[in-house]
Image 1 (tube, rainbow, N blue to C red):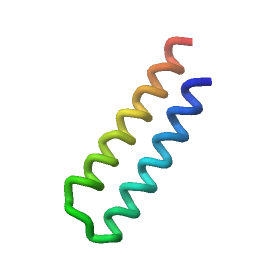
Image 2: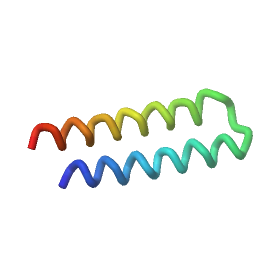
Image 3: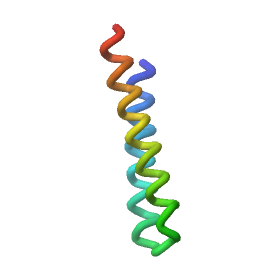
Image 4: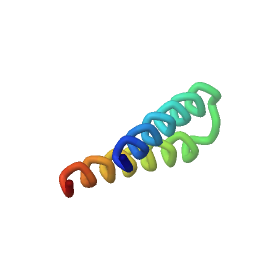
Length: 51
């Protein structure tokens, strides 16, 4: 259950990173969103291994 929520959060964060990149915001904002998305997807993967 939590893995699905984390995957959804990762997808939203990737969308936010892309949107902020398109809006020409400072570089650290989309990079931080992408890093958080990657961490969320890794956590979801690790939760699937546990079960």
